[in-house]
Length: 245
Image (cartoon, rainbow, N blue to C red; front, top):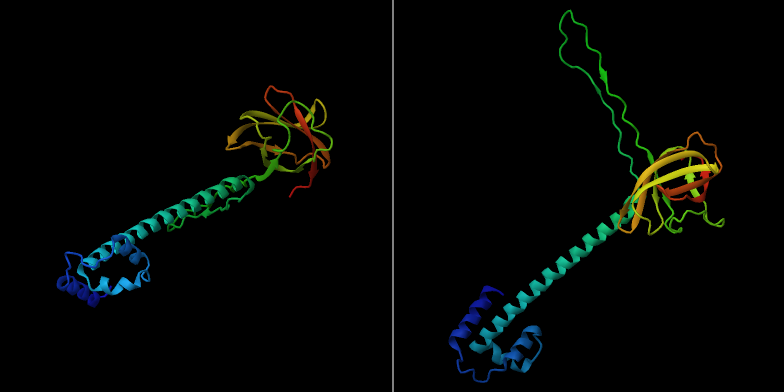
């Protein structure tokens, strides 16, 4: 509201105070006029020339603006909470399926101090090359039966694996418990070719078993993959092997 309007309203309230509220509408009508300027147009002239009505009208207008600011703040906070919750949900359900190798850098340090007469220059010291992180493959067997020490049906889709040394993150069947598990690869029973042990952990609804499996020396072909909690009977499933990638 401009300075001129403020001065005009102040002058009306001083010149036409109307303390007896002669001809003034009900308070509910003034509130409706604050919410909708086009409501009750037949009373508009009286309101703008009555000091008492102008005083009430301004009070209701300030209260309405306060409610609007409070409502806007609540909606903004709710929207922010939804965005934060959605971002966390996306991050949580994709962290196991993504692999970003760390940038590997190596530096060679040299002694740049001035060489003193009669002394041989120091040979540059080379840092040892940083170890390359293992490739990660996620093996999802969540839709298979909980471990009961049996072989999966012949029509079960084989587990796809790749040759080479890599870290497997096995998503165990739903309902599997945390703890130590044993993983084997074999072609003939009682003749395991590779045996590793890992500790499974619960991550919300998932049970994740990380193990490092080195199959670089095994020929390409079909194998049996056996998984069991330590001390239990083996649950086996077919596994197709492909060349390393």
